[in-house]
Length: 172
Image 1: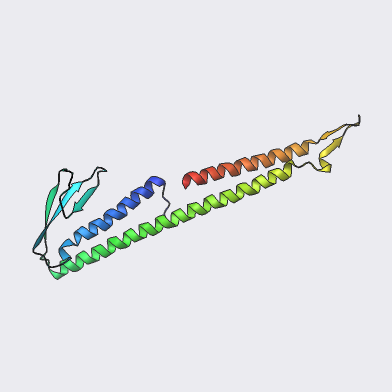
Image 2: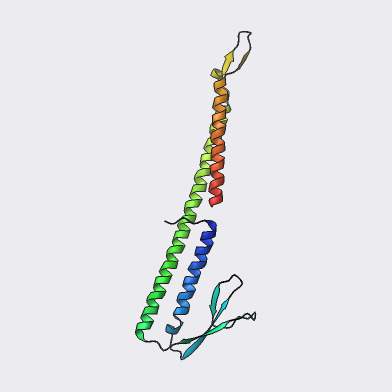
């Protein structure tokens, strides 16, 4: 399965739409018995080449593409095969994008669970137990270094889990 960044996902989605549009325009001659048809080709504000049955309403430059509907059966079959291949490719890209999105959502969910577990361990590590105290000769007592080491390790684990969640969210 392919991995996509956010920009690649947007590019792939645009490419899938272009594939479908190209398939439809490629099949206009095979759509039905018409003597000839005009298709208007222009470039939109995003730099994408668009095809339409009517000229653009906003007055932008366009080209007229004449489409001859009298195609031999072999050409119609070839166009249909091409359309089917393009639609299949677009469906595959969309399926990969959906699977990638599910995988990223699962990664975020797992990172959240890991952070919750790390926070629980930190609370447990911060709880002072009877064995954490060291009695001094003057009758006083203080916490042993092992307590502070335990808390520091739990804090580091919680910080690592928080960082892992931030990375998972950025990828999402």
